[in-house]
Length: 108
Length: 121
Image (tube, rainbow over all chains, first blue to last red; front, side):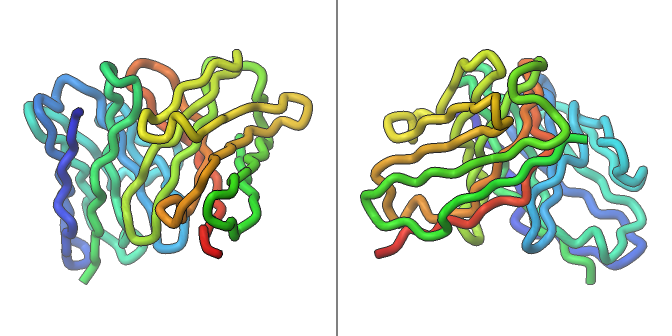
């Protein structure tokens, strides 16, 4: 089955840029969606179809997808961005979603 | 704006059946091109898809849980239900319901706040 690989953690200083990757075989041919999960809260969709921001999501959040890596970029990182981030694609063969293992973004 | 609210017993004994409810507010469980889905997350771990039900009543389940799972909808109450039989400690998790957008590249939005289930005697 299809596997998505995310780094367990990413740490950045406030005001800098965080890049969270999601690796998968030819993932560029699929649409990737990203969810943000703050401690003790439910996941929230932030990016869908690789790069479309959900309504209300700051423009600091952007997405890209090419070849074997999709990337969620958080510009001008703020303390409120500290959360776990999950990527997700749809496995059309198994007809079910596939989630990455999640990346914890820490703001130093 | 659609809002979802899960509820359930909190504590279930091993081998018993887990039953959860997802109440849908601001949207209809009986119409639309979307569907309703259940996803769970063990403490400190990642997300696992359980299954989904379309507004037509058609269902799909995670193969690893298929023999134990039933998802149904009560359109009169605008609620979606999850039933999981023969539970073990491995079924302890936060359970979320969410709306799924069906496009062949499906995504989930919004999610409920979740309900915590612990399987223990």
